[in-house]
Length: 196
Image 1 (cartoon, rainbow, N blue to C red):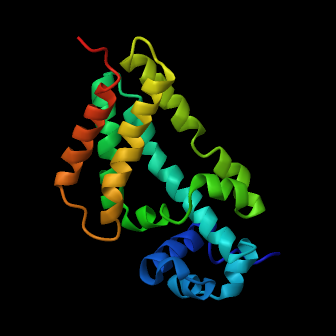
Image 2: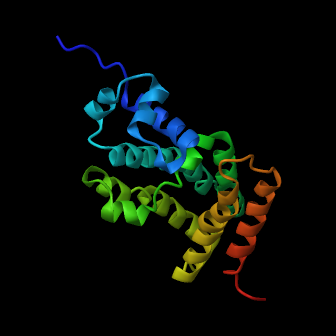
């Protein structure tokens, strides 16, 4: 009978997140092994390479981040949904600093194109549910959901808030950031409203 695995995939990914927070993006499999208190062989038994470990960490972190973003996009009041989506970004990064740092490891497009073979498809489709939820918000927020208005909604609720939060990742994220991302999201999305 096979001996049960001492470390789960999540244990190893938790160790990778910790190693990343301590050693930065040059963290090695030996650093991950030290973080979990196990041998490197335990890691290579479950993951084919260092790149695969950190790519899987990125995917898991993005997936966990998306839970709150999906909930925000699904709020019935579209104005509240815009503010909640923006506020989710600093809230998540503050509550989960190691995962926030992990989300800086890759660009989705680069991982989908050039990442380890086993993660490319997952990376290519990581935002599919988010895009569907955002399109639902788009139709609730605008009577005429044009591509330009979709671009404004994406910028207001995803790109701009993340750009504001990103310099603080790895440090204490100031409380004022929450109000700043909500205000900027509202202002950007409002650019799509018809002029009086």
